[in-house]
Length: 551
Ligand code: C2E
Ligand code: MG
Ligand code: MG
Image (cartoon, rainbow, N blue to C red; front, side, top):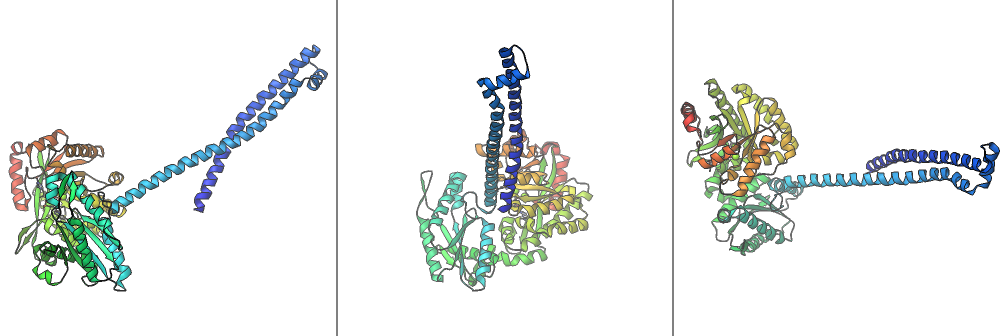
């Protein structure tokens, strides 16, 4: 603070000096003019009085002519006035500059604060997001863990959210979620952190509850509070809410385990008529496949149950299949082929995601190298998970795999999401830059669904923006989606990036995207994800008949 004040004082002092010097110069010029005028007036008065110009005459008029006395004073008045007004003016001007600088600095500070806030908060409800919630739970565990004081986590799910969203659209479901968040916030007097950790899931961290019975009573009251009807666009709506409850330290010693087990309790709550359930270890045995998967994931990689499928990408500028996105599948011995949505989010909650990323990178690079050797020009895109950009070991892992697989990195695109960058932008930027220096390229996946700062995007060595399928699918029917897609294409091009539209499943949508200058398309219209061998055959057949197949 003192440093700031002394800097401000120096700044003021220097400005005052500069401005004073300028005004003083003008005052001195005025003084000079006044002295010249005085001399001329004295000489003229002397000549008119005595008929000639002489020293005696000058002394005489100086003693007798009152007008000259006044004129004698003028240079001094100029001098004083100049000094006085220059000081006042200089101080006023400097103070003005300092005021304006401070105002600008305040504005920049508040923008920065807002940006920081947005990274840790849900934009719709302004509640803490998943990252901040996990952080708070970790802090609470650290500060209370020693005393073994009880902490409780409640996961609150709006079960029919998707149905409501399908019926009323995104605005309707957004409005419902906002109303739910307001009710939740106003329902608590006890210290609680309420967060929105998924589109339809809120989580609650309760510290210092008096008894387990008290927590159950609270869950019951939340259930009642959310049972009251909501109004969205004058439509009366009822929500079905489920609540899963866990206690620390009884049900887990870390945030990952606690949230995972609260998820199991949530599942049990869905099937109970109370609408809420407290976790019990016996639930694990009877829990549905999604919940038992978690324990099987570890071995899935070792047993070779994971497989990469490849979905084609078509370059509209060159009119050819130019690449493929690698999408992981799990050939589960009992449940059959599982899509990533059924297990990647589970892995992301724990450090297991690092093993998945490692496996996917190795397989994807090896496949890319094989295609390269066969002379097939297919660039492979790989999805990185949100947590990967926080892992400082990732660049070394990639460097090792690059050497081992002999892949051409120029042919690889690593897909990252906006939220994965914004969780910890400086670390992410450093990791991205290191990988970029090895020759790999980066793409922003699901663009438009997360919050990202253009100033960061501008600093990233990106090659591609992928517009999320939720915008692409409806461009012909939803005006705002059409505007978003068009704006994103222009933005990407202005940043020198290629644009890929994902989820293209309709020929009219593809034609519209082409008219708007979209560079690359991906979607069921062109091809669904398929195993590598099938993709190779498909690619060869398409390349042979490319004129007919690429629209
Ligand atoms: P994503 O990266 O946005 O992948 C695109 C998803 O959209 C894929 O689903 C793809 O099958 C699907 N899709 C493509 N075209 C269409 C279409 O025309 N219509 C419809 N309805 N869907 C289409 P998938 O394979 O289930 O992957 C889902 C998400 O799982 C991916 O979204 C990605 O975020 C994640 N994921 C997939 N593989 C990996 C992986 O290896 N590692 C990580 N960390 N995440 C992965
Ligand atoms: Mg992707
Ligand atoms: Mg995507």
